[in-house]
Amino acid sequence: MSFFIHTEADLDHAIARLVDADPRFGIALSRAGRPPLRRRPDGFAGLASIVVSQQLSTASARAIWTRLNEALDPFDHTALLRARSAKLGRAGLSAPKIRTLKAIAKAIDRGKLDLRALVDKPADEAHAALTAVHGIGPWTADIYLLFCLGHADTWPAGDLALQEGARLLLALKTRPSAKEMGPLAESWRPWRGAAACMLWSYYRATKQRDGAPIAAVGNG
View 1 (cartoon, rainbow, N blue to C red):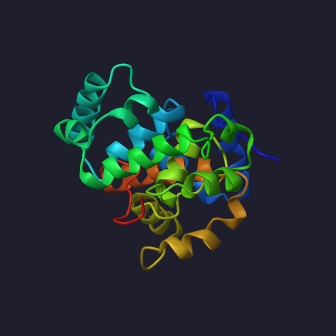
View 2: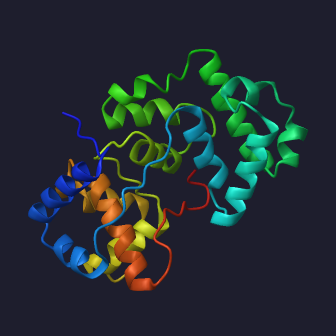
């Protein structure tokens, strides 16, 4: 059975179940407070915005996203598919991101990627469908599933801020790798997405830094 975090009430329920499963999240909650409900639009625009923002500061990503939407109005997969790479480059997109967005638009156009259908799939199946598209890595898929579709058990194991948040809360000597993050979170199923939100907030409160998702290089 799949659970979703679509509303503030959903998030409250998920956090409560998580604290029941692991009291250490009660410590995180008392120190960092309740994490915000960070929802993004779904569909092509939502997925494209994640690709655009990867490895960029918030300000840079916002500027590029604004230019991109101005250049392609309306912004959809058809417009992106027709746009020349030079035009996309002038908006600020790097060559790898242009290739990824083109690949996503092509997969949607050819019916190989149905973003609407992902809503009804279990998180693991939806994740596999996304990463089957060239350029969509595990991190991008996880962030889309968590923040655009609200899958409650999504676990972005390759996220650097999440790894550091886990190290801090669990009092680990070293930051766990993406591979090590899987076993660490097994007992938090089916609320690993809520655990991720809690750990990002805990990271922010402890480090006094932004607790937003940070993709590891090469883990898009």
